[in-house]
Length: 272
Image (tube, rainbow, N blue to C red):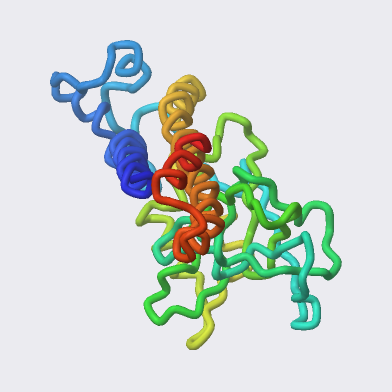
């Protein structure tokens, strides 16, 4: 149920981002004298006309800027097979990315090697895949928000990942995630990809991506709206981890008969 809920929340976030910052639906509605469907205080933050730009038609008064001017990208750590030993530290690897984007907690690899302080990843941070081994290029350039790990105390970015850290606090993780999920960004990164069996993203490819920068007040509203959706997603993911641990602990006892179903249900209910 948590997974289904998160899929719905992610689809809602994706739809709002596309409507506001890709299709510019509220601007088009105002230009045509239609109701935007949004509260007045939000509608008022959008202009009532589009104007020409290097990216095509964009809302009047908005700017086209390079993502690298607002976000710092930190390259992950290269490693050797002998560094992949049991440890309280793990690498966020290529396997940490779901196909098409999103985070996979089972992609972490135990790691005992060196790393730079800036290569540490904290829960809630955004990473972008810069390598791919899928035939359909379903991972390269895709984003993921790293979750808290119950197994490892320290997470480090591997060479296959870029950590995206906003220099501009108005560009929140949810907003950047929307940019990196967009078709335009995917097309841009794919155009800057080399290789056949293993794909590699060219240096500076992500930083050079140009996007439409909305006004700060609109970004604040968007961050408030979408931030609550992301918090619900994180909460559901954390609960899933807890439930998975309980399942692993209870299942052998249920199978052996040491624990009854009613007892197991009580334990699960107390954990929620």
